[in-house]
Image (cartoon, rainbow, N blue to C red; front, top):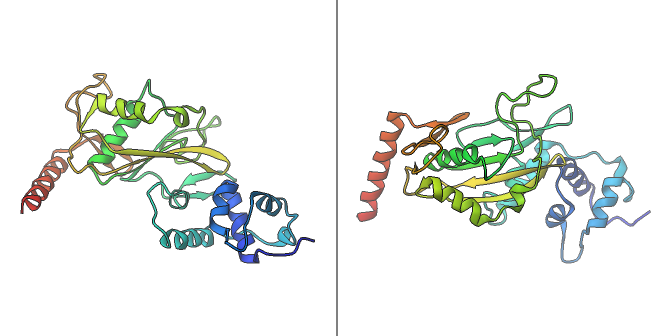
Length: 260
């Protein structure tokens, strides 16, 4: 039997991370110490149950893992695309699938697919989030109301990305697509994570300081010139008069503060 250098609690957390679909390299980050490296092989033996008595140790619960990751995140600078931050937004279901916890909201939107050819889905979402308080677009997560082959509800369920376009597309092409349709251009960053063994693309959109972001071009149907999209709970749609007025008033107040 291999001599133990990892505690029961750490093994429990590692098993929970593996169940969540986190890669070995991401798990190592949380447990490597100067005097005790935890390499990928050690994590694999924990997965297989061949490391000491790891087979008899139960995986940590979702709540325990989320608390651990939150503590880790609080001990160092984090970005909105930090893997711990993003993973904490998902939860596992009894049937083995994963879903976006709490579903779509005014700062989270789900899209099944990504593409530059028919980009209006995620472009509208980026504009809407930039005009509200910013947030996330998840690619490879079923939209609200989506149905499976047997008619089952797939709303907010992780289905994974079908292709590799999201990872392979050049960042400049994403920026150019946004610039060609919107002014000012939303500030967008991206990453790819694994949730339950499936690849999910993640856009983070910042609230734009010069909002409103307005459509300067479009296809005449999904996006029209002059459109101002706004993120409401569960949907991105054209802004209401009241919210547009509030947005402009807020911008004027901020402009006066900057002058003073």
